[in-house]
Image (cartoon, rainbow, N blue to C red; front, side):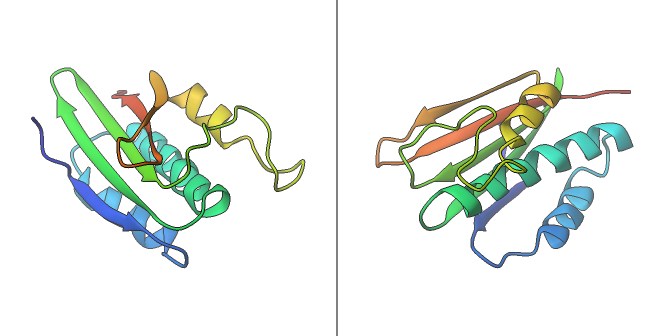
Amino acid sequence: MTPPVVDVPVRPGMSMSRLRHDLTTALADVGEDHLYDVQLVVTELVSNVLDHTPGTGHLRIVHHRDPCVVEVEVDDESPVEPVYGRSRLGEHRGRGIMVVDTISGRWGYRVRAGGGKTVFALVECTG
C-alpha cells in the first residue's frame, strides 16, 4: 500500500492557501497542469466538508506512480451522499462535485463503518 503524501485533519478555519502550498511541496514531481487539477479537486472536496457537514473531517492524498494517478480521499461525519449540481447554499454554489466529476477519472463515496463517509476522486496524471 502506498503511504499518503498528505494526511491532515479538515477543520473550520483551516487555510486553503496553506493546503495548496503543502500540495505543491508534496507533489513536486507532477506536472503543473496535473498539480492544478489535484489542487482544484482537493479544494472542492475539502470545501464540501466545511460547508455541508457537521464537524470536521480528514484529508488523505496518495500519489500512485504506476500508473500515475493521484488519489484524493476526504472523510466526514455526515451520512448524506454528495449531491451533483445542487446546493443548500444558493444558486451560485453547488457546482463543486460537477467540477470534481469533470476533472477526475473516477470519483464516488463509501459509507464508513463508524459513521459518515469517505468521498474520493482519482486524478490521472497529465503531460
